Structures are given as C-alpha cells and as structure tokens.
Length: 548
Image (cartoon, rainbow, N blue to C red; front, side, top):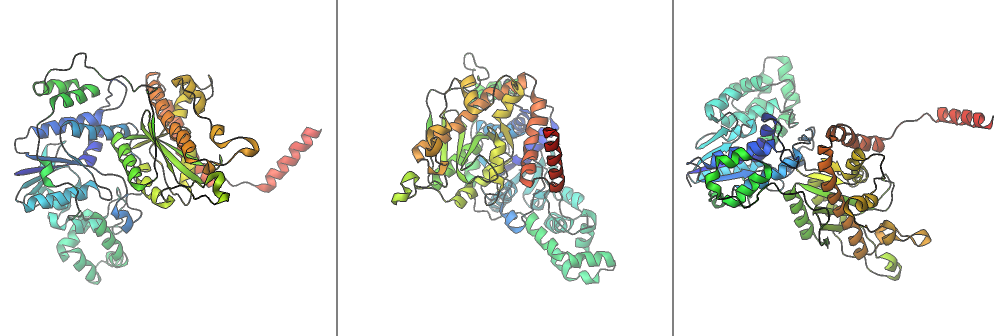
C-alpha cells in the first residue's frame, strides 16, 4: 500500500450539512449532507494515489473518555432534526461506493483514525486524514498529513503550528491547558490557545510547566495553574488520541475495489442525485428499465416475523440492525400507566415493517409462580440497559414511538437513567394532520391507516378481577403483543410522516409538537411547587360558591 486515506465520516457529515443548501429526495427525506458526502468520496476515489480508503464513524456519544470525565461532551446539543435521517444514508453511501465503513463501540472515530494512521505509517505508507478537525492535528508529522475536503487544502506541520502556535507533537499540551468548550474539556480557566502556546514554548511540555508553576511571575496565572493542575492533567487524557485501539479490521480491508455500477446507480437514483449520475454515467452501465425513486415502504407487510430476545448475542444483533437502519421504532412494557411509578418489564423494537422483537427483562413465572415455576430466561436488566443505552442515546439513530413521552419518562428515572434522543412520534404526526377528526390511539390509527386489527392490552392481561400486570403475562403472549406495538408504530410512522411534509405541517410538528416532548418530560419529572394553604383556601371558596 502506497497511500492510505482515512476519512473522518462523523466530522464531515456536519460540515456538509451546514455548508450545503437544503435538499430533499423525492420522498421528502433531507439529503444535502448525503450529497456532499457522496460527491467528496467520488472525488477521493478518482485520486490515483488513493489505493486504500476507509471511512470512520463514531458509534455514539459515549466512549472511554466518559469513564475518565463523566461530563465529557455532556453539553453538546442534539443534531439538527433534518440531519438525523441522513446518518444512516451516509453509511449506505459508503457501502454503495464499495468502501469500508468502520466503527467500533467505546471509541471515537478520531481514535480509530489515530490507530490506523500509526499502523499505516509503520508500514511506510503515506497517510492522509480527510478532515479539518483540530483534534486530529496532533497526528500530523512524518508521513501523516491532513486534507480539508471542503477547502481542498492540505494541512501539514506548518499549518498546525500556525493554528496552535506549537508543532504537532505539542498540540495535546496546548489543548490540555486551553480546554475545549465544544467537547466540555475543562482545561485551565482563563488560559486560551495563545497563552497556552506561550507557556508550552517557554517550559517545554505540560508536566514541566505544572512542576515549575511556582516560578511564573504573574500571581494570578501562577495561582490558576497551581489550583487547576489536576484539571489540566485530566484534560490531557481527554484530548490525547489513542493510537493503540484493538482494531477489528486490518488495513488490508481498506484497499480500493472496483465500484459496483448497478449498486451505486441504484443508490444515486434513490436519492435523486441526477448531477452525480451524469458525472459518472460511464461507470454505471445502463439504468434498469423504469428506474426511479422507490415507492414508500408498504404499510402492511405480507407476513410478520417477531423474535423473542432472551440472550445478549441476540440483543446485540438487533442493536446492530437498528444502527444500520438509522431509525428504530421503540416501545416499553411496564407494570403501570403511571410513568412515574411504572416498573420496566420489557422493551420492543422494529427496524422494518413486519420485523420486530421483544426483549423481556422482568417477567415472573406468571400464574404458576406460586406453584414453584421458575422465572423465564431473560437478560439481566442492568446488562440489557448497558447494551441499549448507547443506542437509545445515539444522536445518529432516530427513535420512533407512539406517545414516546411515556417511554422517555419511564426510562429517565432511576435505576434506568436513559435519555432517549433524538425522537419522532407517530401519535403526534397523526395529531398535527387530523387533530379533531378521530382519536390518536394506536389501535384506532392501525385500523384507520393500515386496516389492521391490533392485539388489545386486555387480550393479554385480562380484565376485572382476573387482570394481571404485564410482568405476569406469558412470554409467547407478551411477544405477540409487544412486538406488534413496535411494528405498528413503525408502519404508522412510515405512513404518516411523509404527509406531515407534503401537507405543510412540518413546522408545526417539529418546532412545537415534537419539540415540546422533552420539555414536558422534564416538567413531569421535576414537578411543580404548590401552596397547600392557598389551594385549601380556593377549595373552601369554591365549595361555598357551589353551595350558595
């Protein structure tokens, strides 16, 4: 291998989104970031020097750095809602171009880039990191350089020194002092990049500076460094990239392979990228007869396949499917309609119409428990939540629910402590489209829009004195009911969400109805203070008026 290109996929997505004007494909899905990303990768593939290319992605906001400093990246806002559906499409674009899409749980894309850059350089290859991220500039030097794909500008040691005031090998020390408000890296208060560079240039490195902080003449700066020395050391652990990640894919997998013309053509046509199709028409071969953007997914699949997930490996497979899809319908089963008191019994997920699963977490032995029957096999609750939490909090995966506020309230409580985001809601979509025309419960909407009769809650829990809580429902019945809930939620969302756009309800939906959900969740969790004496006075007053 001569020249390895490592593309910072996660970083480029945001730059492309903000750099390009809004663009939608025929079904209304935003695709401006996908267009910019695909165009950039096509150009990269045309570079004769690039005999190895890989695109690297973050898996979630959580990484080993959160174990070091729990508030790392804690204040980052959720990505723009128009960007969320593009995360999965960008991964799809990478595969359509026959390039490896690399991600690894627990590590950021930057750490994977750092490790692969070291491995490639050790083999004598030239390495180009396709990114303008300042955090990657610590890697520049030797045979490793950077390329800003938006400005088409090469970044070498001179450009790094111009940016930080120090050579690349001292960038980490400067960042440790200056911190980074974007990633919530604390640094040393009152010290910016310029001052940090002056200090590192004067003392050589961070450790020497901290050891000799007492020699600094300015009293305030001296005291600040002495007081915040540990913050600087913690910050160094946060900004220093790992170059020894136990990577799961060897460099040999990055060798460029021929483009699959029909597969790439199908992807570009699906997105409506006519200019890109024209640009590479000679490589695609003839378009299939009648080729056009695909119709929306069918509302009612011909068959259903629901899986009971009772072990870690099966749950990991479903989580991987959700990440690949970029959208997952999600539902909780609990012991109560009161979200502030309900105990979690299980969760269900669907990633395509007719394919769903149920993950039991706290089912008892049903009516037979008093007779000594064993509890059914289930993944331990804490273990399952540790697996699900990164998915449910992943900004790159849209979580769709039907009245998802309830699920958010349940899971936000201790001991679950899960913050579901970003979200979409089929019930709210129905409400903004047809607020007063009918009810918006799942059973009614499923019949109205899907011509589907759902399993009712009473069908599995019983009624009256014979009613049981969901943790007493046998698993076969729980699977049929819960998996159908997630499946129907996804199918309703696929049927209703395009109408929100075409019927010009998108602003109302996104800026008011959906935006209000996390606000209401926090209000209901926090509660409100009341003046008991004043309420009693009002009660007495109203009672007297009614009696008069």
